[in-house]
Length: 198
Image: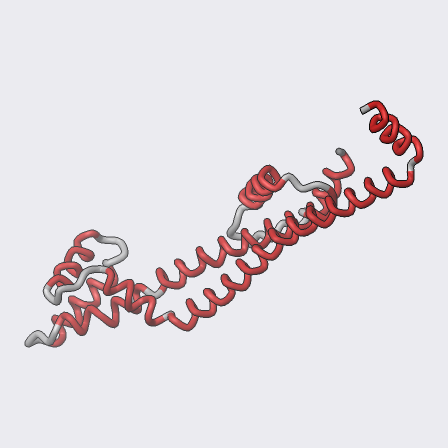
């Protein structure tokens, strides 16, 4: 048992976490996967270590997608609000109002209400800002989706590999067991005597 724990510690000696991430979160994920999969031996421990790293990276990229969209909100507001605000008689007033709304939208509820009121005049809501943020970062999001698909495929393959490894190992054990039974005269003798008594 102590030997398998030292192997596991070596496999995870360098956890794949960024400086903004928690090694404890990774360890908790890895422990949960060990509990679920119950790896038997070093080969399965390696698979579980790989799966842990892949799942953690998948979670990272999903967070990244949200961050990419959230960081595009300011530009989306700058694109939408001036267009919807129209052209008041005094262009300086419009520019001043737009600048104030854009600066305050993230921190002041009143500014958000003003933008929502403006959007409602055109039958829109805040999802229009989300849509513009997503549209402006579409190529980055598409690249992240491709990376996620690849990682999810690798994770699923690792799960299948554990299943295949276990099936293959069980089949080998059956073959060895059958060979031993066929070649061991004591087992054959016991088997014949039980057949004779029947």
